[in-house]
Amino acid sequence: MFHSIRWRIAITFVVLILVCMGGLSAYLLHFVKDNYLDNLRMQLTAQAQLVGDASEPYLDSGQTESIDALAERLGNKISARITIINADGVVLGDSEKDPKTMENHSGRPEVIEALSSEVGSSIRYSTTLSCDMMYVAIPITVDDKVAGIARVSLPLAEINGALGHMNRMIIGGTGIAAFVAILLALQISRSTTEPLKKLTQMSERIARGELDQKIEVTSRDEAGDLAEAFNLMAARLKEMVTLLTSERDKMAAILSTMGDGIFIVDSGNRITMVNQAAEKLLKLSEDEVVGHTFIEVVRDYELDNILQKCLKAREQRTGLVETESRKQFLGVIATPLGSGSLVLLQNLTELRHLETVRRDFVSNISHELRTPVASLKVLAETLEEGAIDDKAVAQDFLHKINIEVDRLTQMVNELGELSRIESGEFPLNLGPVDLSEVVRQVSERLRAQAERGGLSLKIDTPPDLPEALADEEGVEKILVNLLHNAIKFTPPSGSVTISTKVEGDSILISVADTGVGIPADDLPRIFERFYKADKARASGGTGLGLAIAKHIVEAHGERIRAESTEGKGSTFTFALPLAAKP
Ligand code: ADP
Image (tube, rainbow, N blue to C red; front, side, top):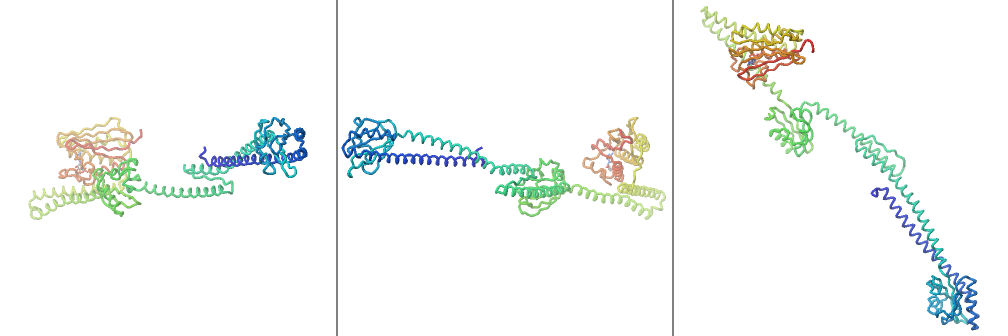
């Protein structure tokens, strides 16, 4: 409480008032007392003079025995004690006591003083009357010679009573004045500190983020000026915060919609900010990134090296990094930002994959074309060189030429079909399809081929399989391709099973075989055009069947996947939407 300005002002005021009033009272009491005593002294001096004048004839005539009676008479009249003393200090008369019993008064201070100057006075305790008294003595001169001393004295009890009353009045008055002064001081300090209190409350609210604060300016004094300045400051602050917030929101929107990962790293290598793309790229949450060092988060020495070079040289550094841990191919740009750096990571993995696919596609297509074209050329040259004259050989060669031309035609047809599906020129003819029937027909078509290969072909479809909403011709194409592959890649005495089941909103169709399987490295790529796991290309296919199947399934809004264990077999599963939703 006493740390507040209000109380400090109030207490200072009160102490000041008490000191002033105390000083003033002490001075007043002293002044009044002095005044009283001076007046009394003057009064007693005048009376002593009269007493001196009255006793002078007695001293002059030597009738000292009548002096005591005179003293008593005069004392009664003026209600004071009167003592008349001769020049040797012998008391000749006293209004209160028998002079004969009184000791010599030549040693009394007022007497000594009166003899050396005109008037002598003293305040002391009277042993005769047992109280404080004021004594005033004057010399009585007869023929210019001191014949005696007239002394008048009064007890101070009365004065002390009057002074005591005065004291009480002054102390009471001081008390009341001090009390009023304290109330006033509290009021003044309250009105002085009130605006400060309001300012404090407003500052606290602003600190909590409530920026719409305004103090009412009620006075034109310094507190009013302060309130006005504060209102101005609060308004400016709001403007600035609004501006900064909108800038920050813009930045946040840009950063969150950016496809590239952004990190802001401080000079101590700690990440202070990341965007969503960066979190996605590293598959980490913001908590696992912000506050950690860059190397801790990216866990790649090469990547960190680019940042370190940028931090050291304070220049932009770029690079391409293939991360070991995440198997990602990243483009890195580290740019100095303040004392730290801004690191941008571009995920080029997909781009590089597409590039590989494109390269492989070109090399595959040329390979696929080269083989039949080369055999055609050899066959044609051999015929030209004379084989045409041998009818049987010519027949055989022409048959072979026919097969190669068929292969080329199939490839060209499939490529055309694929590009039509990809470019959307192959509209799906959607309708309810009885998949059990399609499965049955397709397996009948390929059963002979399976049996030739020594394989058993099984169908596992539930009797009440609901209809799918699909393009029947497309579904047939997918099934033929999958079944054809399964038969092609399964050695004799193996089996191929086609099964169907309902799962959620879809029907799942699987073609499983007990064949050679697909190496794990090839598995993710078998749906690419011309991609063949069988590197010797002994199977004789075009490498386009799965790519076509994938596109048809995806055109239905569904997916196809392959699972395989090398040497044990493969299972291809694709989904089709149900005609009637459950
Ligand atoms: P292809 O005309 O060569 O059969 P696909 O696109 O149908 O072309 O298949 C691509 C490659 O996937 C095949 O060359 C083969 O290596 C592999 N493959 C497909 N189905 C199977 C399967 N059932 N078993 C083993 N390998 C398969």
